[in-house]
Amino acid sequence: MTPAGEIVGTALDGLRLDRAVALVADVSRSAAARLVAEGGVRLDGAVITSGARRVAAGEALAVEIQFRDDPVPQPDVEVDFTPVFEDPHVIVVDKPAGLVVHPGAGHDRGTLVNGLLARYPEIAEVGDPYRPGIVHRLDRGTSGLLVVARTDRAHRSLVEQMRHHLPERLYSALVRGHPQASAGVVDAPVGRSSRNPMRMTVTDRGRPARTHYEVERRYVEPAQVCLLTCRLETGRTHQIRVHLQAIGHHVVGDPTYGAGRGGDTLGLSRPFLHARSVSFSHPVGGRTVRAESPLPPELDELLESLS
Image (cartoon, rainbow, N blue to C red):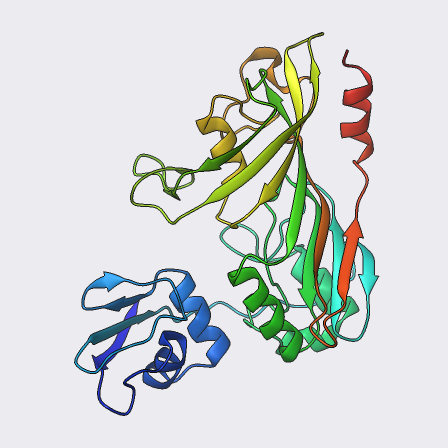
């Protein structure tokens, strides 16, 4: 990590934090917004994650920038995915379970981004060059809808909508046990586990996170499980999985947050978590775009076997 920073002077006094970071660190506004959102910016020693926060003269602004030497992702025509909506500005993709969204540790090729670059080469210039076009993410084992920007204008608009929790994202999740209430909200900060850096957990050191859930159907045979609709108010890493585990109802088939004990998977080789619906304001014109995705066959078949 390479630090950049300075004492806020009168020239920056009153600016939004993301604008000030862009100027101090000499990065784009979108890159500055990501640095802020990902906890890479401090004011007087305190991490600030709101780009809308106004800076004041005399505050110490510190920015940590991570320089990456790995090559940018390349097109891969072999990556299979299904667009359910596309126009010159936006794509909504139905991602299959098992497909990694973008290159990272252990996954330098064969990701959704590689496939997107093959089909929509213009996204190479949109947003983060290592995650071009990506507005939000889905875990590798989660299937369903993902929004991708085709232009910088669309990317800025969609990222801003996500930051203000405006898009509606609904998930179907099959969980162990029966929640007592028919609906509820899990309001608990999520951060990286101090015991296992590959896991997230509910922790006071985490970032604010809220997940709404509603019971769709309760099953008793061959196991006590429950089908939930979950709505993300925030979008932290592994948020739904962590929140449901925290209230004692982990996602069926989840190898990280509860599965792997005997018949706990109910025969699934993936978590029963599917991003079934997304709606957002179109970045050009503002009309509401809504996309839906049916349950994949393996999840639908499991539900058919329950009673």
